Length: 367
Image (cartoon, rainbow, N blue to C red; front, side, top):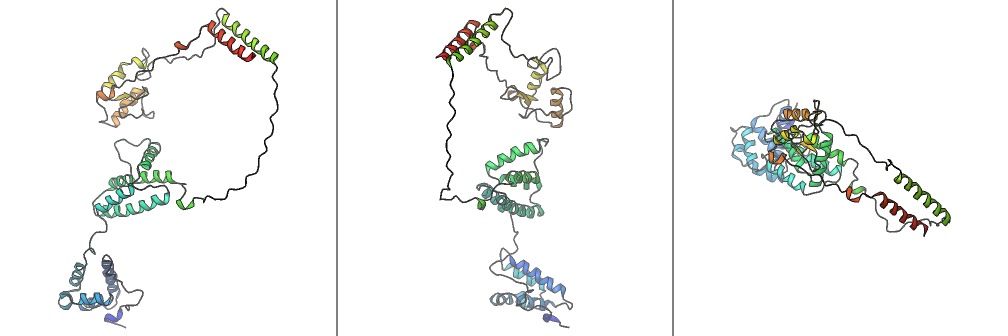
């Protein structure tokens, strides 16, 4: 049974540990692989033999430098002391793989580039999550920060689409709670799913394809007899005059039955336009009117219909109970949008004017 250094694989063996001096970060992996070999030996090596083995695998010019270290030449120095001395010779080999500056740089650079396909987003997602999880394990950031960094790295146009998607997919999401990484990721993948890749665009042929000739078919000739037009026009004029001049008769008008009571507080003695509770809640900053003169929450969002309550005001109070601190100042909430003045009356025609208008149209048809 072999003992000592004879138990280790040869330098040319595929299982031999490898160190590339041009890539200092490979040094720690080299010592990790070396320690794994030492631990698997049936006959443990001495501290001196371990140092000798560590110098056997690197290139010869690297081994010459390592063997000149005091920790190598002094047999009383343990292998761990020698390993520490070697690591100190290569700045960068013991540094962390990612820093907060690396993560912020990644986000800033990615924000300047367009993300048009799922493959482009997946590449960004993998790189960001790898760096973010490394920093999370070191206690630098948490899950909320990772989600925010992912969102901030999206280009502006895609961020706007993600906001719209989240409002639909997560309509019941609390306003004071940030979205999770999964919610952002699901929204982006939903928006980009099915988007064509850059390499899948079909080439445009420079040779025009032959298009079958289309023969125009002549349309049938339609002859309108003047006597038919005159009879039709006179019949319309007679019917209109009969309706307009009939006593107690008027042209039909669309009717709409107003709903009784106040939609906001439920009081049957007034309507929402004159509701004192609307004024009270607007002054308290609970509600306001939007650009369409509709009553909305202080945040500008529509009043949820899935909250408990017998009327609109009950749901407003319940929403503020679940989301405290959302009341706006009175200067913001008391926004009234004046309805546009009606111009219908200015264009109303009398019965005589209607008859004259119809007669002009009939005369035009006769020509």
